[in-house]
Length: 225
Image (tube, rainbow, N blue to C red; front, side, top):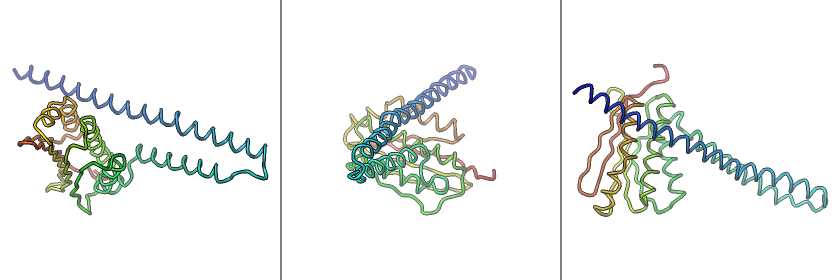
């Protein structure tokens, strides 16, 4: 019986990690596509425009046009950098989470997300903070597929005793059908299993009426450990 349980647990974990790896690969492929279709093309157009303007009418060269293009390129590169290496995550997980939520709300102003984040945070390995941030971002992505604007979300980050940390995500649904649709999503199960495996932590799940709560707990890994 114990052997069967171990095999089943192994296969479930394997499937969850395959799902996580595939999702991260898709994100990197999407970033590469954005670079090819937007930033590289924009830089080529800028160069041709500047060369043509200087060659044809150097005395009336419209500097404001290429300045606008340079500003667009700079803004796009800044956004790309934020996506590849989240700001603040090196020093403060609460600030990094706040920035992530603001980024989601910038894309959709109707999102109803409330946060309770501490001002100070423990010294922790940036790689661990990045992973926790990725988990939260992936959770919001999963919910966004189900129409995130219909939900009310509360996100809390809590330092516990003995170097333990807790990220609580409480999701309130408008009706029982929406709750059932999301709670049965295999992606949520993969997400919880991936978190447990890669952090050696725990993920508790609770459902009451029209609310479900995901409770992620992990132990801090300091830079000197």
